[in-house]
Amino acid sequence: MTILAVETTTAYVQLYVDGDWLPVCDDPTRITPGRGVAVLLPDGSQAAVFQDRTGRWYAIDNNDPFTGAAVLSRGLMGSSDGSAFVASPLLKQRFDLTTGRCLDDEEVSVRAYAVRVAA
Image (cartoon, rainbow, N blue to C red; front, top):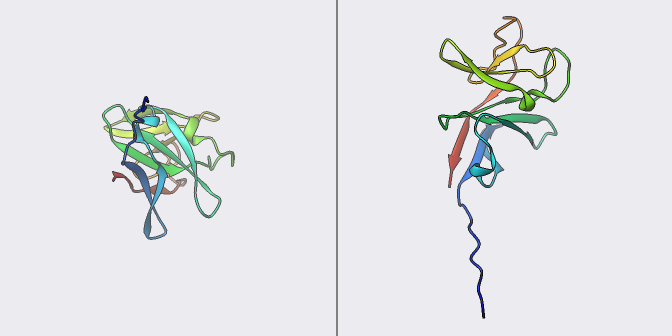
């Protein structure tokens, strides 16, 4: 009899939402550094989750406030003055991944979430 071993991870990517940690990904290695993924939140909204190439995690609202489209998870990551940002794939406005503040229009921001990888 042959038994196949299946590798599993016990780590979860979690967002702090409404006063509690919400698991959004059961395997952190599924998220490619430098790219974002969209996750569905319990209230029906979406968050965009990112891991940069140094291993740091970020999450912001996925909706682009300039267009209303849920596309920020598809944006390009970069950095400006030491702060990580994502540029919207539509109109290219940049959003700070730590604070959610728009770097191109100080009156606009998106929600930023605390992120952790925990067992």
